[in-house]
Image (cartoon, rainbow, N blue to C red):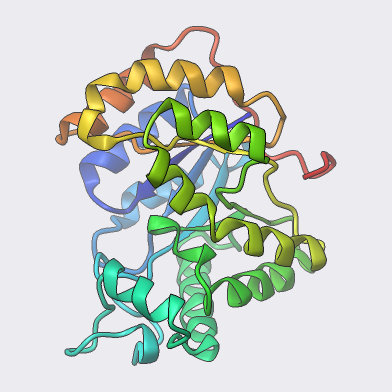
Length: 268
């Protein structure tokens, strides 16, 4: 399975923790936020040096935790020129008010920023707060990934699970949250398969962050369930916030942890 650390670029403290785990082989993928001013070039350079043993991907930011790189945010934007909140983005997505050309322009701008930072294209695409799955956005993500795949291997992450596994995850913890995250993933997955874009067969890592002290128990469950080579376990290790610190310590100290990079020969 793939263990991915999200939110590289959110803060130097989190980035340093992720680098510790990457150097120790405790994670096999990192998702990088470039749509903001908090990505430290020196830390990004340290991450880039680990590239041969690590999938380094683009964590698309389309909410107000970052800022647009394509100039005007258009239908993704708020007054003042920044991105809107997640709640507003969801309202626009499900009412058909996100214009796909706006999403395409911003995705391409963030891919270009990733290239400028790392000197190459991302190994994968995903989204902060799972925005890559939303109506009006997912088509642009699939098209961008298909274009990237013509030059080099690339994959896209989604939160879909086969129904029996999804029901088990919903019973385990955070049933409504897990269902809400999985619901828009199915259409994205179908778009990716139609375009022959590699993607993960299963996705784990969702739990109730308000009860972060239970993460070690959840993580043991994720490891037991993620049986396929390209199943992805999403994590958020860091320092400072208690829940991120516990994720970091759990990943650092787990026994017999041998995550793999995405295997492009394996079926989705």
